Image 1: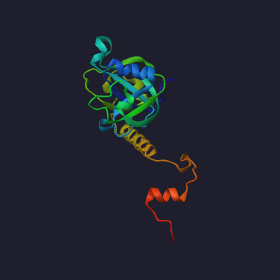
Image 2 (image 1 turned 90 degrees about the horizontal axis):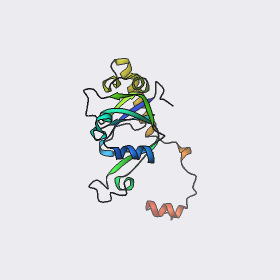
Image 3 (image 1 turned 30 degrees about the horizontal axis):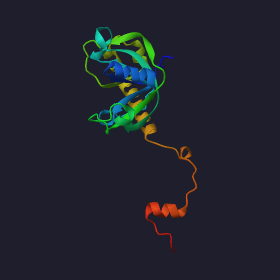
Length: 184
């Protein structure tokens, strides 16, 4: 199902075909915490394919995938076949995805070649003829995008008490954890 006009889209860099296989087969995308955009709570990821995708597929967006959630983990936990990688113990967001969808027409980069992350809307994504068309241009659109990003950031950093499990706690256990003295 294509994104709605008001959906929040994060364009994310896909450096190599192996990363595409992870998205396609395993259903997740990784973002290093230290380089992550401020807001991860988006409706879709759009994948900007790097030079390693070859002449026919490089420097363009061909696919999007709906975002189902995210969690914080380490690179070593995500890529278990690389336990000695220099960044193995760094924190990464693991963004869980739904099934990738091919765009009706690829969105070529044009003069833009180097991007990492870019926020846009479903409306802009569906009408874009080049990467430059994804950027918001007028103040009204900028305010709508800003409000959407702000609302998502607030939602993402909040929790509701009803989401927490009901667990009876032994006061003696709490005393041990908190260093409290329960004696009168």
